[in-house]
Amino acid sequence: VDVVEPTGSETHVYGAIGADTVRAVFRDRVPVRPGDLLPVSVDPGNIHLFDKATGLPL
Image 1 (spheres, rainbow, N blue to C red):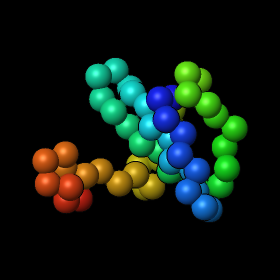
Image 2: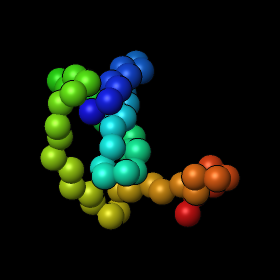
Image 3: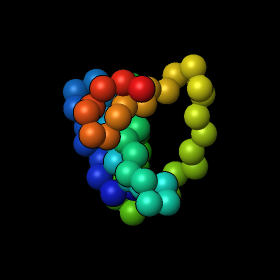
């Protein structure tokens, strides 16, 4: 975890998986801090991917 950003009803958590930067959005408050390591699993039905250059959804 690099950055934790509480934004009202959500928490945005920024970090890295290998050389890739990722952002996870949680619908509630999560008890994480910069420097924490989080396990990651993905439900393919709930993931949204965007083109880095254009910002458009893939």
